[in-house]
Image (cartoon, one colour):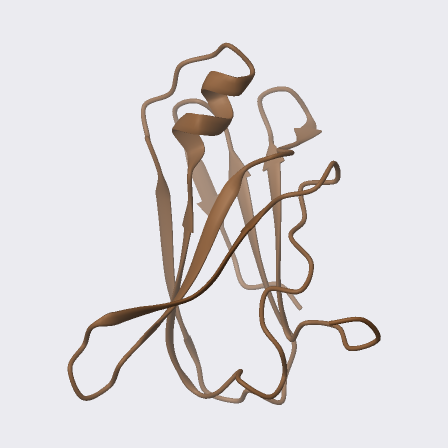
Length: 118
């Protein structure tokens, strides 16, 4: 995706330690409106800054319901910690694929939150 930024971005932060969550596996899905089945679009891993660039191209980013799954247990295990939530799934609706969407995940071992950024 060189030269073309993804219209959908994420940033995962370990709020308990005040650092980015690096090397966290994640998956992006889109729901089929006729069957309600979730179709895998891509997988990735967060970089040292807790970001996963190039999630989706503008060409395939369409209106619909999406889901991001973050493999949080693997992340916590990698830093020798335990957690309550083995994964986090965030479902969201895209009505205008011409806009930029940012889905942050603020994470600790026992809680998480998110919001729609830009």
